[in-house]
Length: 190
Length: 266
Image 1 (tube, chains in turn cyan, red):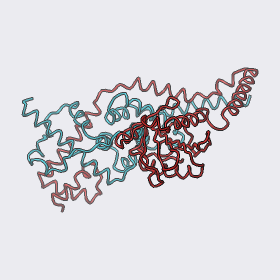
Image 2 (cartoon, chains in turn brown, cyan):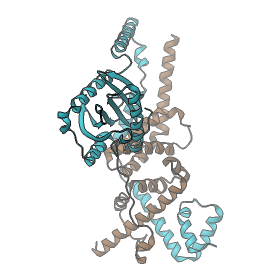
Image 3 (cartoon, chains in turn green, yellow):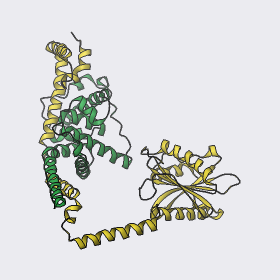
Image 4 (tube, one colour):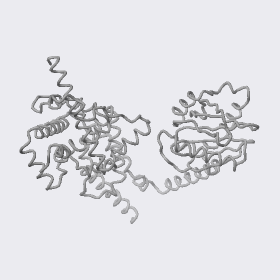
């Protein structure tokens, strides 16, 4: 009888653990899926990575300190999953665009991107997806997810100085791509 | 007060609220009187804001993924005991007896090494013997570039292991299939001796166990290990001690040339 009661208590513990997991971790599903969609080449890969992320998070939920930053913790797991997948597939590292600094461009092009000029959200995201995976990741974590530099450094396991330089390059590259896009649109009257 | 060059260095940190109070005030003071820097800041602020808005407004369907995740979690959480405890005693006893019988059979059949592993040693030995004979040399490739290509695709290596320091030269290689798995097979030659074979493939746990295992198969020493994400089997005409020395040389090169670079003990 004692054994059966212990089994039933165990089942109740598991149910409450699942509830806690749904409450604390699963609420970030949309956030992770959206980010993965822009860090990976396809929707299917993004879904697989997010599923694997949650499976790992579930396995280690006992070690997660409730009330602390669950979203950052999940992102750290997801980045590990993505890196493991990339290593398995032996993808070549991408090289950043060659635009190094503003002096590469005609000076008027630097300010050609008029912040008030309408650009569709979908066009902006399409242009964003042209950045390298490394730049997309850091820009997404800082700008969209609004993590601090320290949090991003912990998620990506790189020094803060690396975060800052990647962020600088990625913002610059996105600005350059958007400026070129706008210049082309004006030239073709669209 | 900061000048334009200094502010441009700090603009990103200012934008992301990563500056301390003093630097923030100094930057703000400069921006209050510098149109160019203010425009540049405005450009980045607008870009960030638009990116954030576009990302958050992007339509997203999560129901399917959520359902799959919950199914997996429920399945992984369901303890076997939950079903076990409600079975009648006779059935539980029969289940325990069946488990014991299976365990005894496996121990007897396997003898500490996987069934797959036992047969692999025999298979690579016979493959080695078949391809070292003079008549079969033409089955193998000698061109270094082609060998490097095969090494990369099937062996997960950026270079073919080089045993020239041990007196082995002019390797010849091929792609072979052993137990339905593809291996990069390299044959090394040393003057006055029978050739030596190296079989390489990306690590699979069921193929090769992690530790160094040495067997004597027919008249050969067969040695296996796993290093840097690559499984390796050596079929050698030499004794186990000499073959182990060769294995150490190969292992060091696997660490240097592995495509994945994952280090495991071997």
